Amino acid sequence: MTRTKYSVALPEGVEDDRKLQRKVWAVQRLSWLIFALLLFLSLLGVFGSGGYFSRQTVAFPGGSVDVPVTARWPAPEELKVTFSPSADDRTFLVDARFHETFAIDSVDPAAGSVLSRGGRTLYVFPASPAHAVTVAFRLKTQRPGIRSYLLGIGEDVLERTVVLFP
Amino acid sequence: METVIRGLAIYFSLLVIVRLSGRRTLAQMTPFDLVIILVISETTQQAMVGEDFSITASVLLILTLFTADIALSYVKRWWPYSARLIDGVATVLVVNGKFEEEAMRGCRLERRDVLEAARSQQGIDTVKDIKFAILEVDGNISIVKNSSAAG
Image 1 (spheres, each protein chain N blue to C red):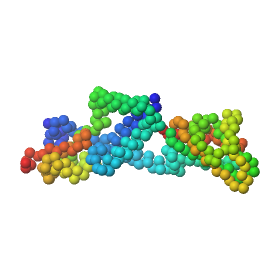
Image 2: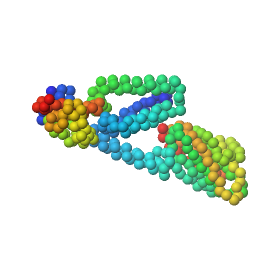
Image 3: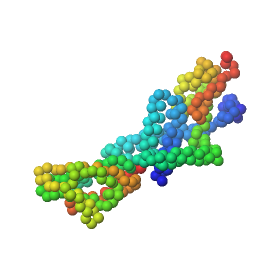
Image 4: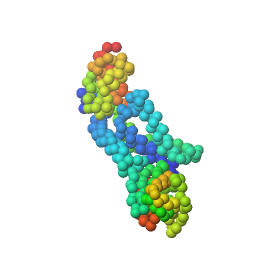
């Protein structure tokens, strides 16, 4: 029988571990709150794959680009480019770092031509004077980490950052 | 390299989450608990394997999991306190016919869980006939009968 603070001796092999157990129970309950917080943040999109904070719309004079801000690796993502009505051909460009961050699985509708200039890739789409046109780039994340890249419409270029969770 | 890292990440993540979720989660297995385990195994399998379905990756993953398990067993052996943290300790739920309410709350157990174990193991129908009810490390509830109990 084991010596104990209980009113009787505990069976052999069973120790009075109430002090440790109280700590463990407290840590468990705290961790359940953290579980709930993580799920709540996930619903908000902090960890990617949908949700308010998972995407951002970047405005340019010639249109806008809806890009992922947080994403997961490896998971499919989407980048949407909306061109304002224009009588000229429209160009969406990304730099080499974009291709290190995302693989482009497909572009819908397909670009009229794809050019490479000064380390940047230009996707040229035909003019549409009457209507705005939305182009969807279906992406696949390449590797986890915090990645920055350039994107732009026409001559206007901005740098964006995406957090890719493993 | 990625296979080993994925395996270790999932192994230790699961270890921490299961431990923090409390022992009751995997001990008293209801049909719904079984569903949770099946879903967890399916989810972790995809996260561990990724897109690499090769035999090499599979063998490496199995080796990773076994090696991690063996290493952890040595850590627990060399540092016994870690075993108590990782595996937990036996929890006394009933002493001399009285429930230890703090322990019952801590382990998220109901009185009926203990009484069910008492009935099935010892044919005891009242808590007064229980000398000790102990939630073991493996999740089972052991019942020690009071010497004064009938039978």
